[in-house]
Amino acid sequence: QVQLVESGGGSVQAGGSLRLSCAASGSIFSINTMGWYRQAPGKQRELVALVSSAGTINYADSVKGRFTISRDSAKNTVSLQMNSLKPEDTAVYYCNADRVGFVTPGQAPRFLEVWGQGTLVTVSS
Image 1: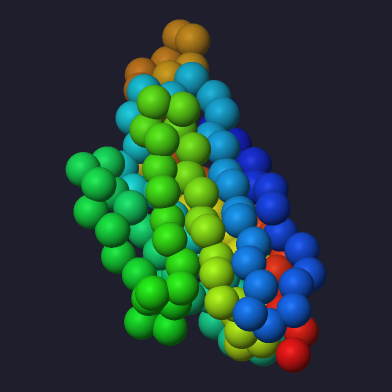
Image 2 (image 1 turned 30 degrees about the vertical axis):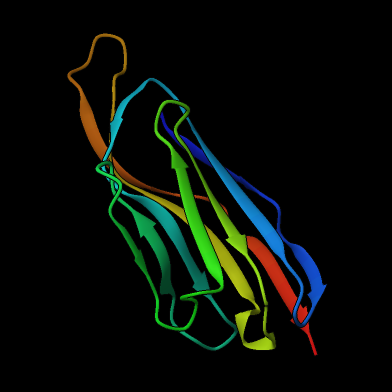
């Protein structure tokens, strides 16, 4: 199967920086978009940033100019550099990979959407 493993969460003071990383593992032959979502306590999960296989990037308005997403398609990894962090950025951040193409021995290729387990980012004022 396919797994996404995240790293890099933690606690930081307002104005600080953190970098999140996510690596996809498995017998993967393609991934459409990779990106990051977040969910703050009592709120719905929301998009933070996405990057397509063609390199098209989308950011939530709330993070534009502060966060930078990058992707290494050869390694199936995606990272999120978060600068000028604010208390309202506090949330669990989830890595997402959409339309992940993978193979299992003896079976036809399949496509799945995969989520990471989430990593907590806490920004104190």
